Amino acid sequence: MSGHYDQAARAAMNVRGFCLGGLYRPLNNAYFNDHYVRTVEAVGGPAFARGRRGLASFMRHVKEGGHGALLIDQYYGDGIVVDFLGKPAPTAQSVGEIALKYNALVVPIYARRLENGVDFDVLLEAPVPHSDAATMTQALMDSLAAQVRERPGQWFWVHRRWKPDRQAARAARAAADQ
Image 1: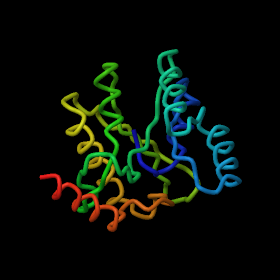
Image 2: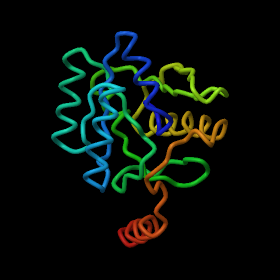
Image 3: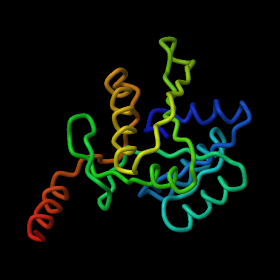
């Protein structure tokens, strides 16, 4: 598990014999998305588009002995609201759900660019303890937030993480349902 820190972590693990396949959110620009996927796969291993078909392929990859890499710092409207960098952030619980269902380890991993601007170190944190998907999701977001706070310039972010209008509408629907 990681956030949009760098694909170097997947590449570093793959050259060490791991085969980390990753789920990704397709970019809105189809031409750039094709380029993005080719680049990610060339450097970091197989990439699977988020959605039913991509998740099935991702899980098949894992069941066949591959490892999975998931980024959890994207807005997910149907997800649970957790704290991320001091703000409410709807987030998918997929990582925790998959870990619990398949008794898999969840290891936060980050590639951090060194001061020379060329090299990276790769940080693997202790596995997140199994509990429930919501608690595990918050623990993962806390891990990522600590990395972003430590090195904010290295968080590669191209998606809108916080969507106040959508979150306000979601809160209004929840209040009306009560």
